[in-house]
Image (cartoon, rainbow, N blue to C red; front, top):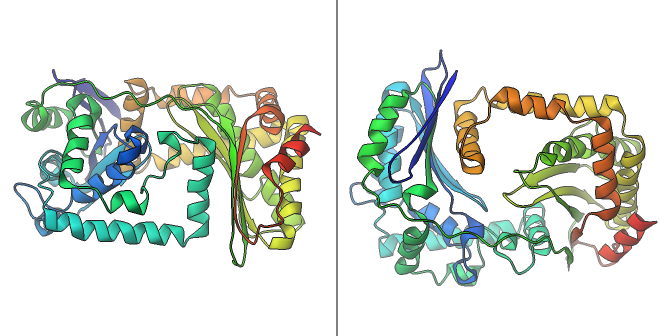
Length: 420
C-alpha cells in the first residue's frame, strides 16, 4: 500500500492510499473547522452547517444528493467534532469521480434555502433534546465544560438551543467564509483510488479557490471543576477527567496504554475490581482522548445511588495502585490491544481515509505505521507507572455527576483521597 500526498497552489491538500484487492473506496473532505473554532455567539454553527450541506446545492436538491450516491449503492455522511468537520462517502471504484463531485458540490455550493434552514433547525433541536435525555451522553458534555471552562473547547458541539434557534442564513455563510478556505481542507481517500485522478479532480473543483489563512483557535487551558445535577434516575452517572497530553506529544502513547490497562477492556483493573470483584456497576471504562494542544483521560461508570461513594473511592485507589505495581504483563497486554485495534481498524478504507486526513491535519504528513507501532512498543512499564503517578496525584481533574447524586463525593473529596 502506498500513501501519496500533494498540495494545490492555493494550499488545498490531497492524500490517498491505494489498497490492492479492494473494489470500493472511501473519499471525503476534512475541514479544520469544528466546535473549538467557533466564537461564543457561534456555538453550534459548525454542526448546523454540516447538516445544511445535505439540504441542497446550486446543482442538486437534498433528494438528488442522496439519490446520486445511493443510486450506485454507496452511502454518504458527515460529522462534526471539536476540531474538524468531515464530509465523506463510500462507493465502488468506478464511482469515485461521482462521489468526489457530490462531496465537492455540498462543500462548495450549499444554497442555504431559508425553508430548509427552518426544517433542519427543528431536526437539530430534537437532536439536542435527545442528547439531554441520554444521561451517558450529556454527562460528557458537562465534563468537557468543566475541564475547559469558558473556552471554545469546553462548549458542546451541538450548541445550546437558544443559539441554534437564532442562527440565520448569513451566520451560516459567514462561518463558511471564515473557515472553509482551501488551506483548511484536506481531500483524503483510501481503497480502490487513483491518486493522479484525484489530483486532476481536485484541481478542477478546488483549484479556483483563493488562498486565505484560517483563524487560529484559542489555546486550551485545562481548568478543572465540578458539575452535579440531581435527578431521579435509576443510576448515578460518574465521570472523572484528568489532564493528559495532546496528540502532538509522544507521551500520548503512554497515556493511551495507561488508560487501556486501567479501564480499557474486560481484563483491565477497573473492570476486574469494580465490576467483577465487587459488582458495583455494569459499565465502567477509562479512555484517553487528545486535541492539538491538550488531552483528557476519562473514567466513566454508572452505579446505584448508595454505591457511588464506594465506586469513586475504589477508582482513586486503583489509580494510585497502578502507579505502584502496574506489571510488565499488563503493559504488554495494553500495547497489544492498542496495536491490534489500530491495525484491525485500518483494514477498512473508511477508517484509513480518516486516519490519513487526521495525520495530515496534525503533522502535515503521514508517518508510517511502522513509526507509530515503534512508538507504542517503546513505552515501558516504568513510563506507564510514572504516568500513573501523575494521574493519581498531580493531574488537574474535573468531575461530572448526574442522577441520584446528592450525597455523592465532591471533587474536593476525591482530591483529598488522591493526596492521602
